[in-house]
Length: 336
Image (tube, rainbow, N blue to C red; front, side, top):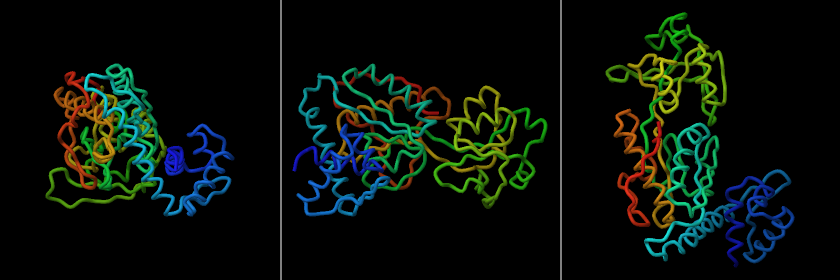
């Protein structure tokens, strides 16, 4: 078995079609199909069922793909583990993040990180839901909870969901004070992650009363959170939006928090990385950088620093050991 066979298996795991896997490997689909048949013949196993439009791995194919990915990660980090501490980080760091948070927070941080480590090639893959396709990433920036014992979660930022509206909308339509009042208001919904976007869950922030679940009839729906926030700023209605996206508009007076004595849930921001045996020095360096940026942000007193503990994946609140000599804490526009 050759290392190219491992790369093929890892590509099949992360891509959804044979043509996409071929593109990622820089070969033609017929050439990849031939290589796959040869590999299956060598192993005596069927690794994938494929059609012109879809690629479906068998259970053996999924297992082989996962183990191939882990082996490639270890091989990729072997060169760096043998380098002296004073040498630069090299290779490729692949980061995945959600579209909105990735554009506003992760991309600027990667820009700063690249100036610290010019020998690295950086790839940022923005996706609607980056976590399910994690096997193609060294670090996954995730908003929300995840259950997977093979990855470690490093909390970066607390992130509550806020209900907001523009001052003009509240002046024209009044300010809701309780869940029952929401039925009389125009509500803006964000359609994402196959969630039931018209079912809003809320509970008193201070406790003492039972939570409530309300089925709302949306006046406007979008699959883009930034669009929904902009609609709210334009006075079109109430929106439930993540704190990281709404905080700047609230601070600038374009939006106001509504029903702040009610909690609408939280989706904290974490950096997810493989367990230590599958983690390269460049991955450790980037996580250390992210956590330093989060601490800098928390030190600014804006209330959007390190997040509390989550259920599901392992959590790590200690800094990752740096693969090279300490260069001080690196400032950055920490997640909001």
